[in-house]
Image (cartoon, rainbow, N blue to C red; front, side, top):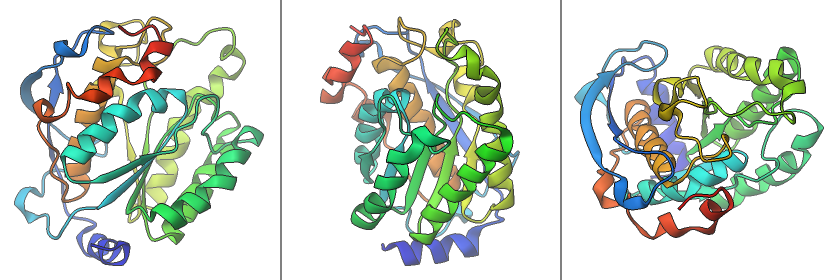
Amino acid sequence: MNSNSFSLRRRYTVGLALLVATSGLALTACGGADDVRTASSTATALPDGQPSAGSDKKGAGPDKLLWMGDSIGEAQAPALGAAMAAGGMEFKSVAAAGGGGVVGEIAAPTWETLPKELASFKPDVVAYQITTFDWGTPEEQRAAYERLAKTVNDADAELVIVSAPPFKIDDFYKPNAAAIDTAPKSANSVADQNADTVHFLDASPLWGTDSTAAKAQRSKDGIHSCQQGSAAFAQWFGKKLNALYAFTPAAADQWATGAWTAEKVYGKFGCS
């Protein structure tokens, strides 16, 4: 399925009510990959409260997903890649440690490389996880997310913006704590204004809002996730893609204990 047919299908299906049957991974923070296991399923609504379309979803789902974010997204990428591949979707990550954002001067490398990635990879969906560097006023944030939406949509792809997990606000982040707090609200407002091609996912039902709580599944540094947290996010995100599009995620036992759990990125964060 090419991007044109995908976008056309979405324009016909926008407005249908959707419900995602989500299931969590019963995971412990930062242990071995063998601890990953499937928990019982629970039904939950999308953040905007849309009900289910169920079998009314029509057509083929997206073929390619481009993943964007900072080092938090980088730690999630191996699990996402494994989960998407198991579900039959091609995946590429451009998440970048120390950057990856779209707001302010620090975002210059993103704006330089993104058009090239869109042209070469040709994704159907671009998922942007709000970075820890999306600093600026709400107006600046909205302008950046609008630019991101236009750039992605002009490449005939849809944009999914995901809120960041809770993370430790240390001395480095404290001066920008207010901007970190307003970023998801700014992103949500942009999604509301571009509902046909931009979607906002609130990840707090998965992580909670306290970075020190067990539910948040942060690594020892209080910021990144280890293998279990990354796997939990990948499963959650796959369910959300199922609600938005006709994508059927693979069961966790097909991918959650694969070779990706040995990726070097986890060693940087003290994961075992």
